[in-house]
Image 1 (cartoon, rainbow, N blue to C red):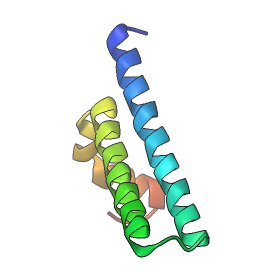
Image 2: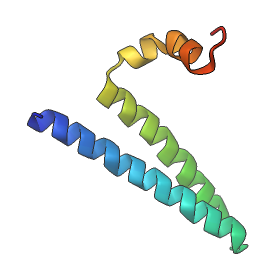
Image 3: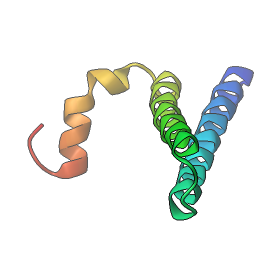
Image 4: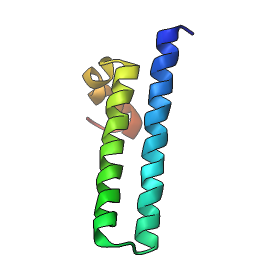
Length: 81
């Protein structure tokens, strides 16, 4: 594994960890009925971190993921794109 591959993989794992953490915090905010500003902040953080994971994943996997999204969707769902 080259340094570039290691760096990209570490960046993806870091983004994934941040995403999972933000969703856990959102779950706590909902379950513990935290104040509305904190809850809204948790929702925004979860949304942004999820979007970040998709973009970092696209960079790590390559832009062909976007080019082949119809084929991938068909494979994942077993249906038409």
